[in-house]
Image (cartoon, rainbow, N blue to C red; front, side, top):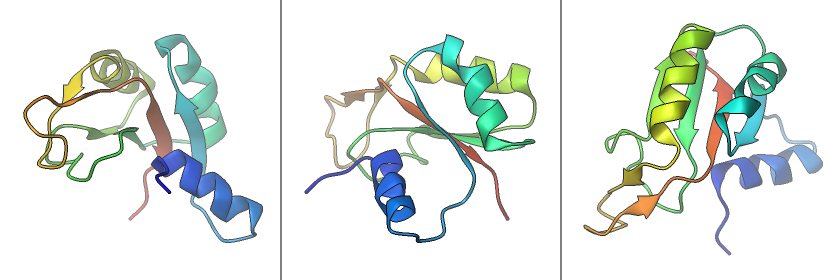
Length: 104
């Protein structure tokens, strides 16, 4: 079974396992304000939702300290081609990003 990160967190939550605050996955920049509100006060981690490891090294995981910074990251990340060792040179198009509250 292959799950995106946000799907795995939903399963954990349903079974009562602790999950950090999240704004959920979004597909459009217009959904960002509601996701930030659900996640709580920043900073936030914005994560490309693709079935591949190495997202951080490939630019698919970013920290945003302000809503304006989050909006810029989401705008650039949605639609980008993420290339990791697991995707190969072809890469994978990012169609969803997860908005999480950053933690230590």
